[in-house]
Image (cartoon, rainbow, N blue to C red; front, side, top):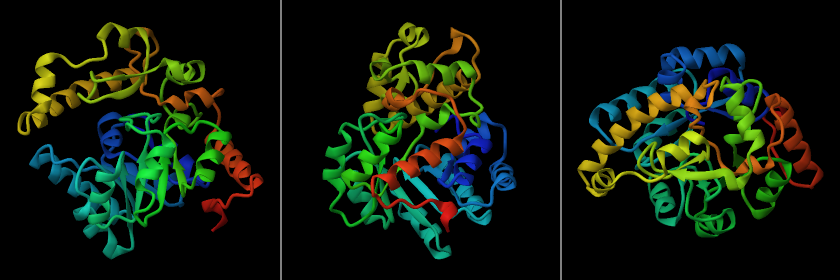
Length: 315
């Protein structure tokens, strides 16, 4: 949900019976909170469980220390569910498990899932080819077939925009579904009305993968700004991204550049900054509406289909 996971949206998802997940980089650099203040803001809006996304790639010692501090702060504030990505999650598990927390790890194929299992994670987030953010190479069925026998619950990430998609994922064998794009087009998200309406208006064919944000493909809406910039990283950037030492520098450069771009795009009211992230689930999204209506409708659809579904408000 970077950069759209504002406190009001995270709180609304949990209050409605889902599990809202905060993104610390978004919370601090986009929405202007310290992590502790941001969590406390969310806590002022809901007493339901929340989670935190932890991008744990060791791009620098400074970033590593910052992520360790963020995780410790989140634990102090009562967060007990963490989603890790792009690194070895063992050290996160070692911090979280002793206080009763759990860690789910983002994966796109078996070799990454096995590293998560070896690191002691409690579940897997299977990121498929229809996801927003950084999509995987496999479709939802293929990635589940690839990682589903490792003895952990697997959550579907990508391509779920309506009740039919949700029910189909559960019938496929997924333990649950992670959604991002669907929750951008909500009343509680603080993204611009133009961004939300774009998600409603476009179709799956309008989602393209750009290397210009992070150096690796990111799913974005094919807007005039995207077409102007192009989708491929330049030759120097591609060369640096292939190097074991230089790739971290290049990703840092991209991260700083994309942070500025995404902050402008998040609240853009014109096509001057329409660099909008979204997954292919846009094909199932037809209206901007409150979070609670979405969660209730999805739960009812699953129950009507005879599928077991846990609504946190039932507990």
